[in-house]
Image (tube, rainbow, N blue to C red):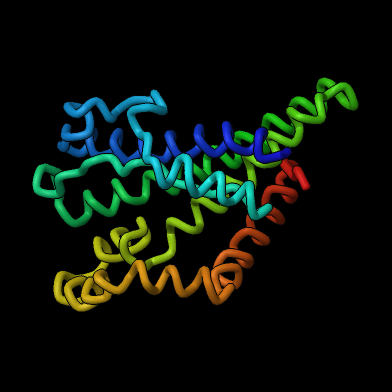
Length: 210
């Protein structure tokens, strides 16, 4: 029944992810998300039937790590102060928010364990551990440079216009490439090294939770 603990952590994390996109877009000249009421921490503003209900429930049913997504916030690249670089900043904001949340959950776990010792609730400790793991997975998954993930938009913004145009030709096939990674199990070989390094780094700075 650990999915009951994981779901609130997942919902909070994906809402923060989308809010970060909208916030950075707003700061860089595009108020589309703000005007549409999407610059909000209200979960219902970011509700997506597939990403916030069906996929998480399937993960629970199949005893898989909890995963999902929220409805993407609308961003108009033409309204950004710098269209290409601005879009890269907006795209990076989502994964960055998850990395910061992972550190925050690890820090809260450390503080709680130091202050409360063995008195720390088992459910609370589990929630904090999942907070670290879920946010690391969300961050590194979204940083994969395959469309339509954030990583593809970040890379496009860093490339020269000519190279970006050539790179973006893969976009129509991106979802199929991602599906292939998941179905073949190659997905874990992409994420596992980054997750391992992150967990080790957290331990090195005294924030180990595993």
